[in-house]
Length: 175
Ligand SMILES: [Zn+2]
Image (cartoon, rainbow, N blue to C red):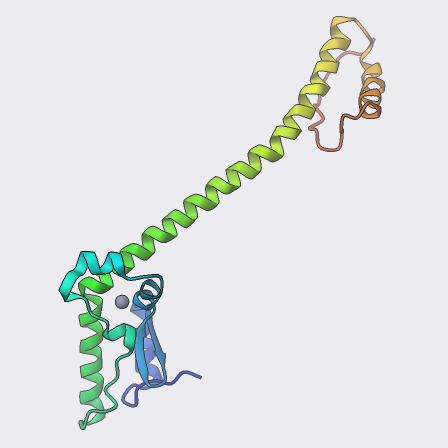
């Protein structure tokens, strides 16, 4: 259940959230999900970059519920704080770190996929190579190409796997 600060209606919250997907609410407080995430993974690089200007308010939670003002004033105050956070050095550095981390993750995933592809195809290419070698042998020795399947069967009996190879579509004139 979404528990917003008292002055914020669901409609206002949705509008605020639309352009700030990092905005989250819990127990009457609002937080920045990006800053919280980076904070949890260690804040040292943010501390070094931002220095004394570092702000933890959107990590610890922001609310105006304690204010003795009318709701519209509270809401304006809250929006002001949100915009201030969006423009703060702390937030900007956290967003950069997150983007970099996502890029690294993507690159790692791509590399992983490439390795898996290479490994899978190494076996396939090896098997294809054997099929072609037999086909060339048929041609060189002037053996009828219809014998090729018999040779492949022999290969299989000798332990070469046919299952994973790319069977070439060879158009050879049969004798
Ligand atoms: Zn933030």
